Length: 123
Image 1 (cartoon, rainbow, N blue to C red):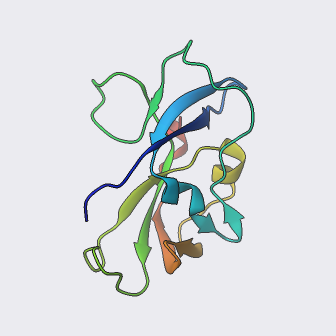
Image 2 (cartoon, rainbow, N blue to C red):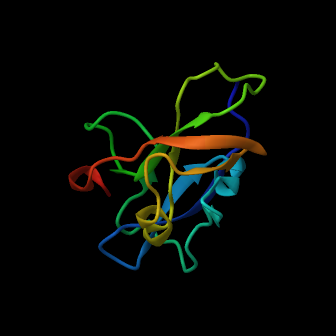
């Protein structure tokens, strides 16, 4: 499945109230886990400290965003069956409430959380 349009939203680190810009697909904001939406934090976005990024290697510019790995519990057209998807979580409060095994929805399809990074790798 090819990537669709992207939007810039705010990303809040665990250690501050400033919001960094992050480029995500609109459907990322519709991810829901345990009844809680992946809504971006409110506030003014500033690139004074750089930007957050969804993926890439450790030598790329930008802060790597905190994320979860999910799998669809039923097949969804355009996605490999049983292949995990990595999605950024924009708000540290939302992310703190997510655990492996939690369920929710993404693209109006049931999902299960199959991975949450360890605390030492959280952004």
